[in-house]
Image (cartoon, one colour):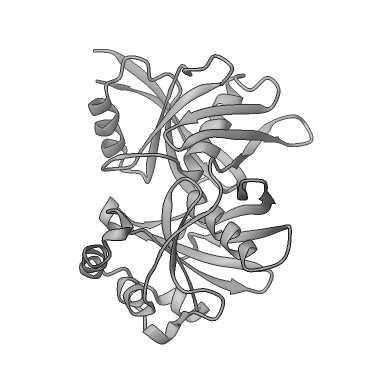
Length: 295
């Protein structure tokens, strides 16, 4: 049977067994769609990536991202981690990679330390900020297992936002963030009640904590009860927060995964561009496992 090498990395951390886990198949040529989905389900991680030759030879690769149940158009930590792995293999000679994905072209800039060692990456989200339907605080609170009064609507109502992948963003109190517990039945009820969500309800709760932001992400309908680090949610959050100010750019350090015992640090920026508000996210990576899968 054919064997396909893989690498696992912890993303958005500098410590092994922190951050968000990712499996990367650096050469997925020959794998079918069904095999990719089966491998992602077998690894049982938030996402698994499969690297293929690009359609445009000017780009680095075509990258396909699968969670446990379906292929994703874009995601944050899979791009950071895949860029890190390919750079370690010498596939980023100028320190920049371009990945073709369903949501568009993703630029990855490789981060190195003083010795030139690859230590992480920073990605630019493929799309400008777009906003979808607003949700009542009651719906968000029910999904997150918190009280309606815990949801803060002073700056904005809970709203679906995307820079390539959609999330419902909601500000909550710090105490509520710590005790939030997703309620699967309420997620199903919320999704049924709001057809404009287009079949996806992934909830990103956040709280301001001094100069940093604390966050948690719940997507039980997609098989992820809680995610330790979500770059594709942190980027629209940074973009949304910029949209609420007159500033031309902002930067935020977002801490996630603490309640799961996998602390993560996501460094985000957002800036106003000609086509809207654009965002980036970056962080460290640590390689953990190496092996091969037979199919």
